[in-house]
Length: 439
Image (cartoon, rainbow, N blue to C red):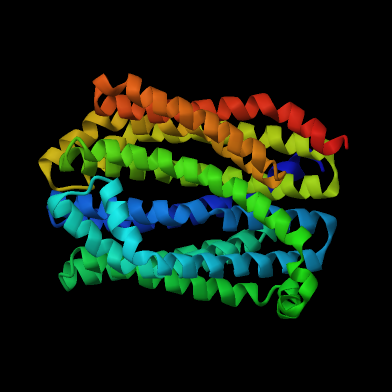
């Protein structure tokens, strides 16, 4: 592959993924912005807490997307259409099982989650109302993760982009209708998100069934060897590692929310705005992670070590450059953007006081995102879990050490958490590469 072709291959996946992820981020941003028009700190904090509960509940199952991307891309690198179809079937079966389990534990999960996040008073009431509606969309989210992962693994990133764009236009419209026009408040925000998730799933299904390997899916669903122990064992081992890794990542974010909640509704609402800025930058830069998952996965499937190395280095270079660019953009225009999220003067003041952390996070975090994509594409999930565990332990110690600094200490610990992750991944990469391509 010539250098120009290498860059084109990266951007053919990275750019649509960036735009898709920005559209995804609009779900949270639109909810926070619309509820902020009410000028009620409890309502804004409740939506923030409820959204983090749902994220914590579902994002730990994001392995359904990441694992499906990796296995589909490696099968595509081998030119194996039937394995691509089998991956879709097995991942869909896992999504169904997990979704039914989540619905069964719903009466216990919601109160336990609110207690864990230290929800109190009016914040607990609004968060409970939000979660009570959105929880029913969990099964939709899980199936959507599988379908989107499968489409990305087959390089159908543009189709995924259009799904997100359309769903987000609908979502923003429903937010404005339910909250500002009909006065449904927090319940309106939750209902808009639930309906948008349903639309995304329907659109992803309509596109997936037109893909050639999908024609084998129904046949493979009924075949006994589709569900044999060896293939399911590979899927479960991969998903187990990704599940535990994501559980630790989610735990780190929930610790960020919990520690902020202990400082009151104003700081919690401000941290929610800062988190939206962080997640917006992370989702943009995640385009390079998606490119690494697909292209490095294909290189591993094809056994092409030289291509793998060039891809890893080039994707990292693009990622770091864009991380610096986003940090500069936040430095130039972040203050008015962040201030627009609330009409409560106290929330706005707190947001601006801690804004410098959100400005630095794109540059500090981008290496860990790209390494995640490389590791997932190569199915080095055990090493991915090990580096995440190390970073989480360091994060927990840093939270204790930085406690006297208050909310600044909280954001300092979270920033270093991202840096430690990337450092561990960089150290392990050469050994893992040798083990994969020399055996």
